[in-house]
Length: 281
Image 1 (cartoon, rainbow, N blue to C red):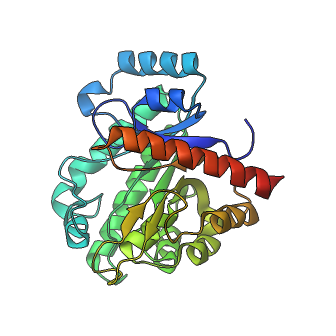
Image 2: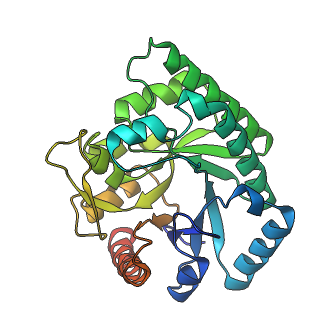
């Protein structure tokens, strides 16, 4: 596959991401998949999905976990509900991520990814060590399936994310870098953050956003690619500088407006193709 193949975030059933047919219509050659519901994660469904990908000539590059009860309504709600951090749901969600890892293996996919949640900023807190431990358990299970685990950026500063990965001490723990999330969560300038964490970046999202007037307290706003404050050309140039040549996976989360979503993903694909040609030559 050529350097920087275009990708899109997809789902099989209801969930985050566009339907596979959109990727086909837009001639997008790679996808990341939002893991389907537990009842759909069967060997038969995996076989059918792989046959469809093969028929369409589309490559699967990562399977993303997500959980019932998560809400991105506002930043405080994310703290309370998202990922493996909240104590009340942690054990059940770790088990579900293990099952998602096993399903990804059926799909022949060597990457599972997720939003870990808001890791405590105080590394002396007991909960910090608890989150380290649950992440180690996930990494160890993924390792048995010959998989890497990619943590999506957003909730942590670059410094905090680097410290967390080092503290976890697992050689299959990496980063799915989403520049817009740094802006949406108010956790840092995306290009500077990318330069800092570059050695751990193994997959990326291409998404754009504008800053909140109260960064870190209220949401920034997701924008069509090229219309926000990420600076997509500089983003791609920095990806080249850190040696990343993998898929450029478009994420545009407006499932309530499917036609607009498809149109903006198509525009994003054309923009990325044009910039890639300019930057890679």
